[in-house]
Amino acid sequence: FDLLAAIEVIDEKPAQISIGYIKADNGRLTDDIVIDGPIDASKIDDYNFMNVVENIEKTVSDYIYENEDKQNERTILVGGLRNDMYSAEESLLELEELVTTAGGNVVDKAMQNKNKVDAAYYIGRGKAEEISHLVQNISADTVVFDDELSGIQQRNLEEIFNCKVIDRTTLILDIFAQRAKSSEGKIQVELAQLKYRLPRIIGMGENMSRTGGGIGTRGPGEQKLETDKRTIKKRIYDLEEELKNIKKTRELQRKRRVSNEIPVVTLAGYTNAGKSTLRNKMCEYWGTDKEKVLESDILFATLDPTTRLVSLPSGKEALLTDTVGFIRKLPHELVEAFKSTLEEVALSDLIVHVVDGSNENAIAQMETVNSVLNEIGAGDKKLIIAVNKVDKAPAENIDIIRSKFNNIIEISALNGYNIDELLKAIDSKLFGNFITEELLVPYEKGNILSYLHDNNCVEKEEYRENGIYIRIKTTPDIIGRVSQYKIDK
Image 1: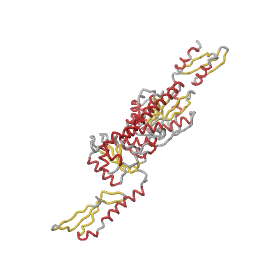
Image 2: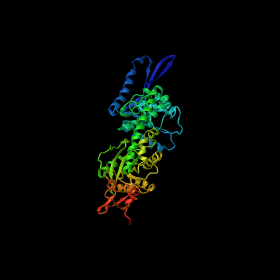
Image 3: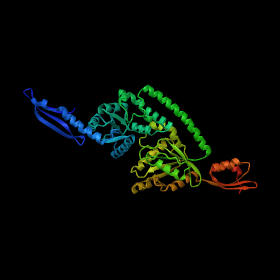
Image 4: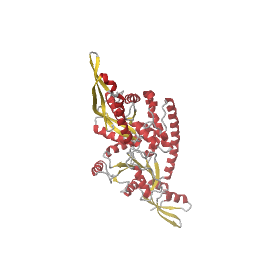
């Protein structure tokens, strides 16, 4: 309703009328009530109801037009449903970052302090009706929940709010869809989106096709996501077949890398920890390939994995891979769809866990990353912890990390601080068990000499009368392959 009228009745006839409405101030509806009247009932036709309503709407809409970017969805966040309110508030702050990354504008937040999820409305009908007034008050376009919603919950909430409702998983998938650049990345994201969407279509009914556009409705390349159940099932099948072919190609590439015996180092970490900046800095000074990947202070700036060749202090080379960032409540559908990409992490020789030392939740973020690494079978890999952003990290943050983890390396990818020490640590982890050996290789075995040079392990080389003398420093595996040419001591 727009206005509320109270009518005084005397002798079964209207005598006086009082009209109340919510006061608008500074572009928003307030908690104050304006009362006009009492007005003699015989003069009520002189009261301009529509003028009052139009003035209120103009005050609110003018403020919205002047102060908000019309392209950004006005979004309300809803969180809570935990015993630990601090954790819920921190999670809501991260949700706000996600909304901003997706192109939305957070205009308000709501918390629900209860432990039990309501099957129909998630937060209960009473709280839902309370938020519906907030939606109307500030002309919100979208309400984002910090946990997963069922199709039925989403439908019921949209009917009460009369606006679009999405959950955290849908939001993350939407961001991934915007970030995907490679063909493989787009396939993986669309597959994850459709698998998450399919079981919710039944609960949503017609609402699914009425949600309009914007956050949560976009697939890779800004295409609108499919809403027909049968079409989605067919598309899922086609995408899975495409991924199978991509996986075969990955396996061939992996076999070639193994045959070249160049170790693979993977940069892993929480989203926005600075992995891309670190990778670019390492390649800038020690890389053989100078091409950069996107650096940005937003969540999930890098989605598609990139691999570059870097030289280490020992002269050895390694392949450096920058991967997608991890996050709390990483959707299971994403982990499944990105399995072929995440396998690259599990099959690497060394993982550098990049930590945002400036974030007060660094320990919790590290635990999230370790959990995902365990989930994809990479929990037992060789590991180096690189605490990044120490140039702007509070001392107490670093002290807490030091107290819980040994042998961390403190770096700043932005200004290059301690990157040389990180490279030395990588070198040591990969090649620390090197063995020095002397060989005498027959001249006709030029392929052996080429093999040793290809693996960057030749320290000294002399052409002698009875063959080529070579001193190498390398892994036991390579020593084993050329053991027949060892010089007896």
